[in-house]
Image 1: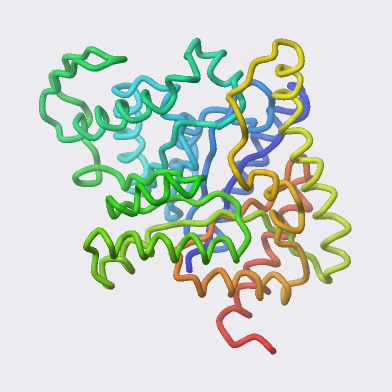
Image 2: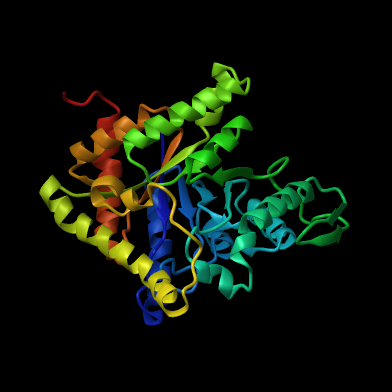
Length: 350
């Protein structure tokens, strides 16, 4: 199982944005130094919950500051972007990174309506825009002239320049927060990014994923190959003992989710607008018992080993929980790579 670091850094005030951005670059360099397989960037606007805001622009800086580590999006909110502009930007960053991109695409957040309002986009159109945009991007990356007459875009593109460094294009993966979207991707033999879930839910969903792929005609080798390209997301905090980890990690986790809910709750109260009901299981992710792996190296290694046994290819880990100081998060990161990962390489005590 591959290990990666998901950087979703919170900045509580505009006055701290610049300092937090500097710390994110430090964390990225640390991740490469410690031999993580990838760093992941998210996209979220207007509330400081993700201080770099635009993962596409930021990933260009990441590409130039690193040399080996892969760079993923978890996810780029495809519905908020013009597909040709996005295809151009990603082709350019594919060159700058020399083929290290993992292009995670999604329709965007399920319930922060202000992301869409700020860009003048009807949130009810989000999924349809996403589907049309992805199709345009894949066609544009062929390097052939593109004529497109769709619901949202009417385009005549002579040819995309530059072409992609990776042929035929960077690796593309979709998010699948719900079971239905995961099943739809399994029918197409497409890998997916899984949102935060317990190990029990992860096992159940991956079992369904395998069954669905087999029912669509995939053999065992094909299923294993696609599953190896899938990633699961976890929030992790490691300290010397379980008690030390819980004393820091649990309050940070709770405060992170309270902050993430603040803007959406305020807008819902002021204007009575939102994006409908939260998905089933969303409440579990804000419960530390369900959404946080927290403890000593031995405790965290046990949880990570259980995840590895599901056969999933990689884990996307958020180490810096909300407004947690960088120095605290970086120590957790170092402990994970120096103490947790080595324990996973040998059988754990019963």
